[in-house]
Length: 208
Ligand SMILES: [Fe+2]
Ligand SMILES: [Fe+2]
Image 1 (cartoon, protein in one colour):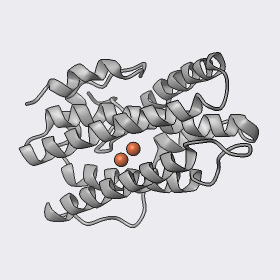
Image 2: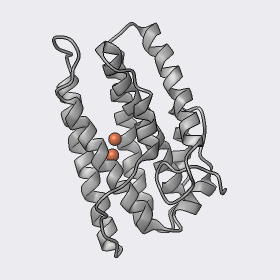
Image 3: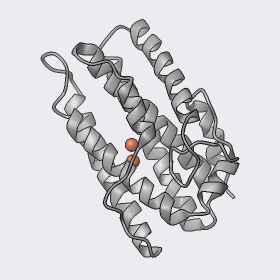
């Protein structure tokens, strides 16, 4: 078991931590976990594509470049996940429910600059949590292929969380973004805590 990524988790601002036991539990059904994961990558790609033309006001330098780059990464992750899924005897499903991400998106403020700020901060917190979960999965993986796969995703999602947060900081003054970010982090902790357990990337811990 490689635990070097676990040391890097201190960099993440998340208010709750996932125990290694969660990784062991969800990896008992790796196919279901990969199917859920594939949908998350698909949604992350769609989200970046959707955001690409939603810069607020006249123009935000770096906005389009950030979104195209994130969308490209997420499409590459989706290809990796589905390749692994099919190699291991699974099949993609046609639909999927993402209660964690949906609940987070519902707390976003609608309209004006607050809409854009919240979309970025909510995207950032989902990336940060995914990043944390990939470190736990890499440390808990039953084989080298899965361990390396989750480790590569950890680094990429760490980059995405930072880039979304950085972009949000262009939209309002430092204090306002910091305050809203604290609120989003607290909401994320609560929403994750309400999730049912099961082989999903953003599942809860109830049965551990
Ligand atoms: Fe991704
Ligand atoms: Fe991402």
